[in-house]
Length: 412
Ligand code: SIN
Ligand code: CO
Image (cartoon, rainbow, N blue to C red):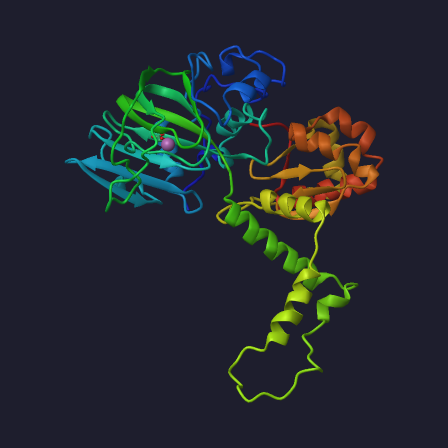
């Protein structure tokens, strides 16, 4: 497997401050055109598009073009190549060896690399600037590279997105059209009748926010790179299906639940002359069993916490090759602090915490530090000085460190 770009010699400073934090709810920020996150969420989020000039002034791409191409060559990275040669749309899925990509001199192609935040600290830090929106809603940071004239065609998405220009220029045209019918027979979603209403040329640092279902088309003017900070919004069908699955597991698992092993019974069944007919008694009786299935807020929160903290199927953690034992780990942590790995998803509520798809009780001991670790994705060295007396905590953090869920020190 090729070496990961983030393990290779670091590129010259990208100009991105990797520890840049998200603005607090009432702090005006250039990221949102000098609005506060509260104003942005009230006026624009899920409601209407917003163009923000110089959202991140002096931005440099989190990854160089060749680093992005290296990522697209990895098995655990989702990438797509979209070409529009001779007016024909074509889509291929990665991984792509460098010689499988068209020449960078050739016009009208684009490479989309999903989940770059999982593989690169700078991309992860860039995504973290958007943590004024709950982690439960944040999906990933995708980077697209395009040659002159490149794009993915006029389309709409079902999710909110911040389209941040990180290198070169891209012309965006958008429209709030009702007709979202697609051109038939194409390998990608391209609108049949695109009716743009507004048009802007985005330069590095400029950003366009789009709520779901706004038609848009972005065409590169010269070579360019765009970072898309995308959100997850499961369909009601998906939520219902996943919740029912979670509930079934709970019923099946709970040893103290008499229903777990209970089985259908019909001592009152009379003999029948039409054996193929579904007995009304069976329907009634199963109806009564199902009417007994109940759930409460705790089940819903438990489901959401495990479901939303579950890493995507292609995520692989990198545990340390020669881990420190617990004592040395605690000593080092007192000097360097610890940081959640880019791939770790840690959520919490009043009673539980959810880490990478597991739900566990949030004891009063854990409450002292776990929400802090989850919110800032880091525990500073000085916190360990007071917390290392707590053996529950060091044991737990050591376990996470051995699993590759946390790292010693800060982001690279
Ligand atoms: C792109 O970055 O080329 C496409 C992003 C999008 O339109 O959603
Ligand atoms: Co889009």
